[in-house]
Image (cartoon, rainbow, N blue to C red):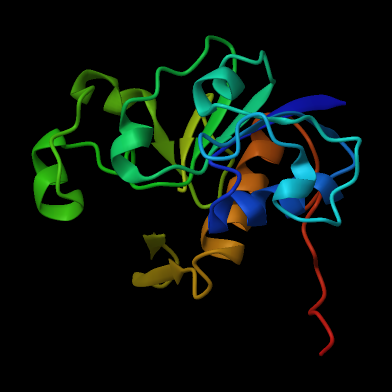
Amino acid sequence: MHSAAILGTSGYAGQEVLDRVLRNPELEVVALGSDTLAGSPAGALDVRLNGSLPYFTENDNALAAGADVVFACLGHERAALLEPPADTVVVDLSGAHRLQDPALYPAWYGFDHPHPESLSDWSHVVPELAAPPGLLVATAEIGVFEDRATGRAVVICALDNLGKGAAGQALQNANLALGLEKTAGLRLAGVLV
């Protein structure tokens, strides 16, 4: 069993990550970060969340909770300020660590990256193709690859930017980085309506 902390749990991506983490039999939630809900029970977010989850804490406290994996479901600028704990898998769902060239951040994300020297420590991977090579993973949107057999380009993109493009891909990458089954916690069948 691995421990998980979620930063920005009260946002859309954070709620989607929480949903998937709760379905993953190999992950246990030890910290729920939300600056707006700090001190509140998990039921403040959703009445269906029972008393087995920890109370909300500030995002900085959740980051420092000692979890094996941290899901950063924060805005770009806030995520760029993160100082990842040592020996912890950190999966950033924002765009704060997707680009390797710090000069591109003002044009793409509207801010100068505060830690440009750390960008090379983050990897952007498509979990269907490869496992993350390190502990810091950016999900994390589109990939272009050359099919060497045919000489054609293969483009992979996420049509659902919350489910697969953010939360699902984040959980897949965390599973791979922790040595777990890639699909643990993911819904593999559609939801009936």
